[in-house]
Image: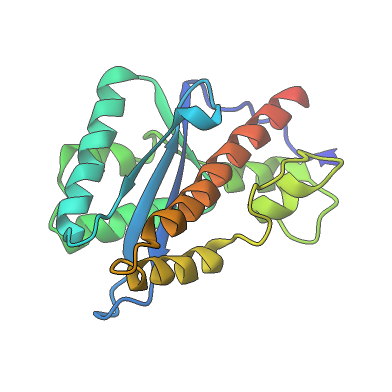
Length: 206
């Protein structure tokens, strides 16, 4: 491992943030079915989420997401939402455009150039040369000589999550949905725990 730059981590209270989205909807419009957040002190029990409930419209779920962002802003004026790569920022932009919320104060705050979103992928690629074949979150965090973090469900991943979400939808009338939902939540929770572990590892590098 080599340090390319010595850029300090941004100051603030970190909330780790990850979205699971379904690109295979009947309308061909990608919908986010899970917005996951890991709050201080970054243990598994500090995980919060917004899940698109059965029968709930995409618009109503988005409204709940905006309210949770507003709650975090009020509670933590220095909050930083740590995400990995562009998916989270892009999704917020898409939802704001979809529902005419481009000028919503929460959206403007989130998407501001100096706003609370912190792309950890961009930070890592600017600052570190790592002995990995790709800079995906799992590749870096699973490396035994780097972060050495382990996902509870080894087979899980973004595409796995979409497949399991469709399994969840299909099982709603069969009584199997709760266990599938818990699998997806476990995966998302581990993703945000992984970014927290990566931040801790970066801090240890000095």
